[in-house]
Length: 125
Image 1 (tube, rainbow, N blue to C red):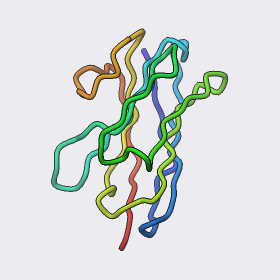
Image 2: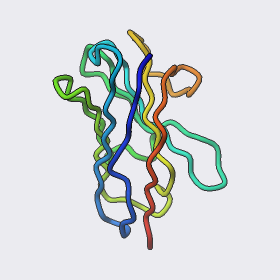
Image 3: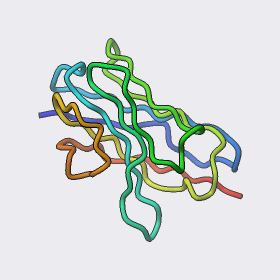
Image 4: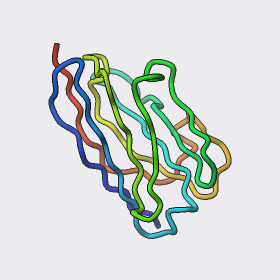
């Protein structure tokens, strides 16, 4: 079993930056493909970014390319989502997700077995 705990959300103005963190426990972090998803108000949960467990590959939804960066620090069992140039439409609950030894950087939430509790990001005008 893998436990994921997110942190770093908050209320910021448009154009600001935030860095989300997700710390994993319960399994060797280096075996986990990690993803970030978000649930905007009144909408369905959507994929944001993913990073491979064993190589530098990443995947992003088009709407965040060039603004968000996913990275991982295996020694700290942590994945990060650096969010720059935030927009009001980035407002959502952000979830960390993981899957074991997955070569696919899937955009589907059904591809991820483990989930965190979420952290709220609110971007004001």
